[in-house]
Each structure stands twice: as structure tokens, then as C-alpha cells.
Image (tube, rainbow, N blue to C red; front, side, top):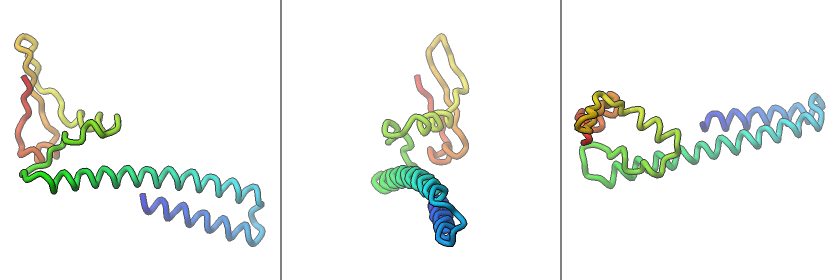
Amino acid sequence: MVGKIKEQKSLLSQARKLFIIGVLKLDDYSSLKKEYQTNSKCLKRKLQDINIKIGSIDRQSHTKNKSHTDVFQGFSNLNTADKKHLVNLIPPLNVDFQTGSLILGLNKTLAKNINNKQIIKQ
């Protein structure tokens, strides 16, 4: 993300140089500058969201004295795409419609974080 922001700044700098030497017209430079501002704002917002998520994970791993991270602690604070991704890491393996029990499997990465145990919900 930081690399993309730097790339956008570099492109604007190049456009500014081309404008100064007369290669770009004012309208073209203005259009490029508006595009840069829009892209930069979006990238900075995404970077801020990522930093918030990393901070949350970091706080979670430092505040809990467990051998694994509670991946569901901040579930309600996640956006829809992140919730969907997390839920997809826990596919159902077996459903018993008579008893109502459900056995869930775990993605390998998630399983390592939860001490390689299966979650069983009854």
C-alpha cells in the first residue's frame, strides 16, 4: 500500500515536470492531479484500515495470556468481506439433522492458531 502511494506521488511529480516544460496542457495536468488525489485518498484510507486491523490483532495477542489468538474477539468490528473470509475458514464437515449437531473443520492456518482442534457446536 505504501509502495502504491509512493508510485502515485512519483506519477504526479512526473506530470508536474511535463506541465512545467510545456508537454502537458493545464487541463491534462489538472485531470491527472484530480486522479492522483482520488487514488491517494483511497489508498490512504485502505492503509488506515489495515493499520487498525493490525493494531487490533496486536492488542489481542498481547492482552491475552493464551497459547493461541482468539480469532473471534473482534468479529463484530470486522467489515462484511472480512467476516465472510473468516467464516469461509471454518467449513461444515458433518451436519446431523436429527440431533442438530454440527461438526466444523478448520482451514490449516486457522487450525494452527487454535491448537489444531476441531470446533464442535451442538
